[in-house]
Length: 468
Image (cartoon, rainbow, N blue to C red; front, side, top):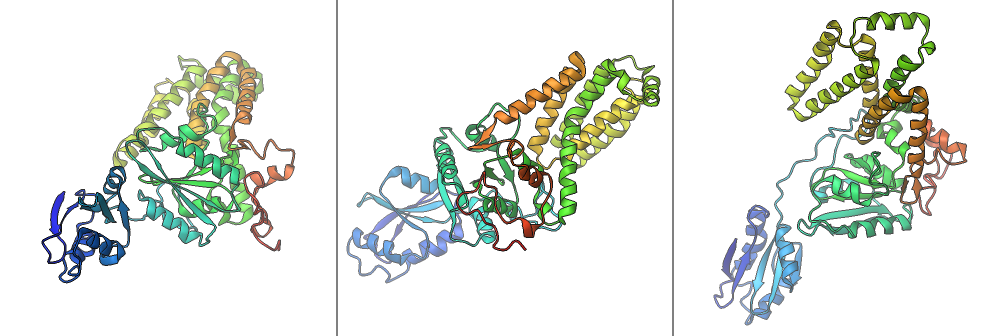
């Protein structure tokens, strides 16, 4: 939109005024820019375009954000960011005012990370609101915000946040360099960031911590990590990433340390069950029947007498059906998705057992494995477990328990080879200090949690002064 206006009552100084309709707020333009520019007697002492220009720069307009532009690229970038512009053709310059439209989703409760005792607010798609939410949690001048533009076509605003002295300088510098080196058309989805700045992009395991809760984001900044906020994406990302961090939630610090420790251990048990249980069942049923107690073996044989398929095909078929039902429940609208999940789990599963297509024990194994993967706090980690679970079933079909042991050893080797910004992915489980093991598996009382993780933190190691 382009409009010609006269400054004050003087028609000798026509100026072109332009903006993008929809990106700007018409009320802000009218009240904060047009009204002071066209008010009588404000520019009556100006005799040249330069005088008008100087008067505007010195505060004749009510807008807080005023930028002087002499390059076309900068002017276009401001317009596309929601600013309006005054064009001074005589001076080959322009003045831009930030009048960005405030139309956006309001701060609401988190949908992915449920909170019982903690804060309920979650990030939204506006990066300025997100940085404000973080600063409300961390009111310290040591919280630094480094703005970066990413995307040749999208010119997406990205903020790197860290606490000076708490985060390692080397980590901050490395993250800053890698984000600035992103040579892509647009940063519109999280995948563009996750697959370009991680150390092992071919690994199915997540290497970028993410959260939609400002309190979790702030607590990880306090532990020495570097945060990334992206305009248009309601999720915060943090580096470096370790496997033990994907097994913890912010609610752990809100509960009693005994309860939190029990739940953390339960998640690790659920991780192993969701990963290995179907493969172990196939291996034992096909190659190692002597490992099954006699009464249980008799029950399994009776249940499989009328089933025409082998144990491996049963489990594979049920796993694939489970994945199909889960994907259908995610893609369909909420009411329909819930209905499909219930019908698939109850009616189809029971009908398959009654029709002697699968045995009840196979349904129990697959269901128990799927439920265990749902207890994992990170959905990215749960997705990796779902993929590897099928791989372990295929290995067990060929080599039994020996194949599972070899596959699990290769998996551990792969995890040990992953490094996230100088920190081992399996740290502290690969360290020689057993205290790290205990701290990862058991939640210490808060009054004894004095020091930060030395693998991640910079020079500011201490969290609190007294041990209690």
